[in-house]
Figure (cartoon, rainbow, N blue to C red):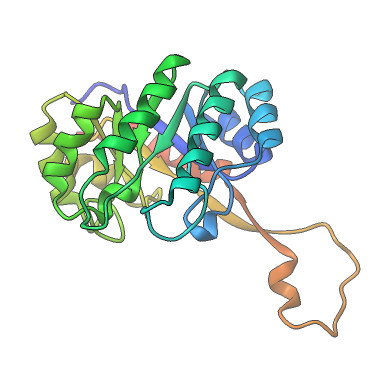
Length: 251
């Protein structure tokens, strides 16, 4: 029987969703905007308010746009400024990731981001840019050398369940030098299985459900009106179900 020291991180795209996650038992928030694009850096007001409202750990995604993880010089300067803002706001950490055109880890520029974060005493997660690298095991060694605390990964597949065997191998190869945190497609019905198959210690997900908004008036002349009146929100029931399932079913 494993001990029950499993750490749950919830990816939240608003202060409201972050607070829901906290109340449901999450231990850390990965805070972002624009989840349909894979996540981007939230606004300064969102970051500041989240830090003021949350009691649990707050890590902010540093990503100036959607798309690939090859950034221009201007985008890089924006990322550095965003990290400084997070440090000044009292965030616990940031989530970064930059690649070279050939799919290797951009060691030089990632190191600059790490050094800025360390000036503020912030921790660092390397995000799923890792899954787009050309050699996951070499990328892991490069990220360890950079000084990051953990890697968020689906094992190079669309979902963590599909990549479970690779994740297991990464955890084994890491040998405690860095945390390998699976994420993507994690649900209450597969979380315990993912733990058994990988030996993970930290788990990541959005855990959202659709909710109908409170608007009463709807303009029926507009297309897709039903989609615009629904919201994807953090589901406390899913978080609690995962936590309950994890702590009951790990063997």
